[in-house]
Image 1: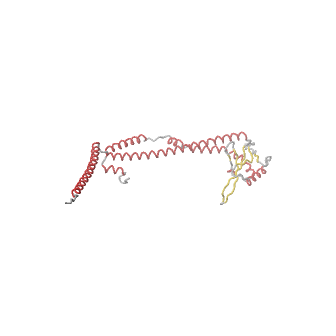
Image 2: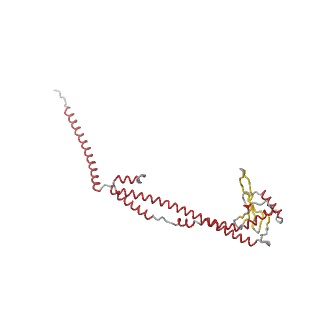
Image 3: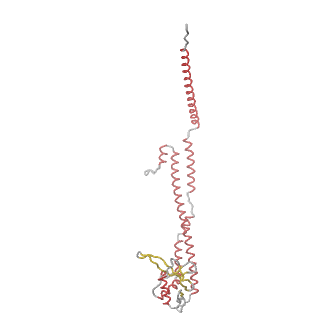
Length: 295
């Protein structure tokens, strides 16, 4: 590509040849190349939009399912929960090891013991219940000050796959607050629902844009097809222009055949002349050979 004129090599060749068909063909090829590049970019963007749309659909499905789960858990909790005269949920907590105890300090001490000794290797282990929901502990590995250490987190498992937490799953040092952790986690269900709704709203914000791109078609397909047809027709025309006429072809063939015959006769004449020379030499030898008679 010439930076000053914007012409490519094919166009230079066409200009120098003086053949307008060649110049027109070079310009057509340039347009075709530009349009094919444009179509390639369009298809790439459309494929990307299709992939993004699939991600959006998957994310919407995920958040929709979680919202339904949380709503079901909330309905069950509201059905089972018992409140005092002030409307505060009564903490009906049962922990393994102190199942029959209602003493907050005893239950908190047991929870503290579990927090210090439990090692679940990343699995959820059930340690008790509250209003029919399972209370779980999970040991997670973490790094602190260049040392690996294990941290236990506490959850309340919903009916299906959601694990609710309060204070990021960490127990308070105060016995009453430590025991209250699990009821507080269940009371956060509406916030969990709200969080999934917000995330889903963010995800679907640009869904229409990606849908339009994914369902669109390239508008210059007919133009590209027409240019290619034009270029093919020009190729045929140029080929006919450059090919020699039929008359010249016949004359060329006759000249080639004539040259072949001339070579044949020439080689035959040389052979005949060599035979004549040999005959003369043989006659000379016969004449020089005469018998010598005795007298």
